[in-house]
Structure formats: C-alpha cells, structure tokens
Image (cartoon, rainbow, N blue to C red):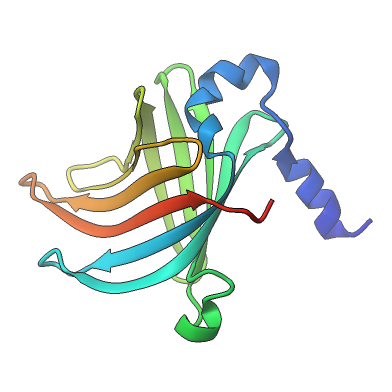
Amino acid sequence: MTAASVFAGLMVSDAPRPEFEEVLRPFAPLIGSWDLDVSWYDDEGQVSRATKGEWHFAYALDGRAVADIWITPSRAQRVIDGDGEWGLSVRIYDPELKAFRSTWMGPAAALVKTFIAHATDDTITLETPGPTKTRWAFSGITATTFNWRNEDEDEAGNITLRQTFQATRSSQL
C-alpha cells in the first residue's frame, strides 16, 4: 500500500455511521460525482466567464462527516481553460448549534472560509459569520441534478451574485 491509498481509505467512508445517518441526511443526495456548468458573474450581474467543472462528494472521517472536492475547470476542460482551483470542504454536524460547521479550502488562492450550514426540505444554505457574508446555497436537489450559488452580502444587505453551478449526476461511476 502507498501512503496515498492508506490516507484515502481513512478519509473516505462508504456510508455514514449509524448514529450520524439522520443528521447527515441533507447531504445524502449529493454523495457521488457531478458534472458542472460553472458561471462567474461581474458586479453588474452579467456572466463574465463560463467553464465546465466537476464535484465529488463522499462520507468521510469514519462516516462522521461529509467531504467534497470541486474542480474548476474540470480536469478534461483544463486543456482549453487552463489551470484553476481544486477546493476541499469538510462538513460536520454540531448538535449544540443544530447546524453544520463547514470549512472550505482553496489552495490555488490560499483561501480558507468557514461556514455555518442549515438545511431545509429542499435547500442547504451555508453562510460565513460576520456583518458581511458569503452565502453558498444548494437548491433544486434531485437524484440527478442540483443548483448551487455563491453570493456576497454587504453590511447594508445588498447581495452580489458571484458564481453558479448547474450540476448533473456524472456517469463517471
């Protein structure tokens, strides 16, 4: 075994632990691989760039968390669009908050963002703390599709759309 295969085996879990199954349920439909149509928006709300991407979700850390890796542009698209970002998120449920704590890391730009996430029947919304917020929201989640949006909210409550993903279940698996 290589160090990478040992690490991967320890990081990824086939299922949630039984005692975490209910709290991780909002993320269950996302487990697997997704193809993305990715759009970035300028300050006027117009698409400034578009590419293909990919997003991979799995139970992690002995089934106690949900982790994901998103890649933009996708590995196949990099030949055309050049290098981009491989982002990693790890989400854990905090029973005191009755919410998820989520940390996203983007090594290309050395960014780290922490979020608190709440789920309803049809959305998962993650927000950074503070008077200015970054909000990431999953919506329209089905077995084969979902939408994701990244927006910033300033102290006055003005919202600026930054990025959207239209996701389709990948046939990679």
